[in-house]
Image (cartoon, rainbow, N blue to C red; front, side):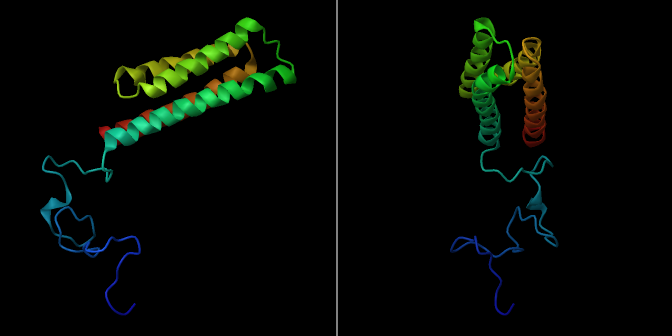
Length: 152
């Protein structure tokens, strides 16, 4: 390219990539500001706590939606879901929504883990609920992994 290179997503007045600004992660930058003072590299997120809470809340909200939408197909496929089994599924979905709204509390992550165990346990009602439990337990484990990596 001829002329100065500028990223298409750069805002007017922002420095060029590779500039000598503190905290630049560009290769060749000899500035000591590329890491935080305590030696921990920043995640690059403006608010990592908020991003991680959003991931947990989104996971739980998606789980609630899938649980509610799974009731009818289970009944059609041949599951003998009685009123008690449907009540358990709805209760799990409500618990997911409530926990999604409470992700600011540190105990909500532990409660979400317990909720995944309860969903696995609901597999005693129908095998497909166990399948959903395995899928969402894996997704929740990934969310916990991302939380640990980002927040430390």
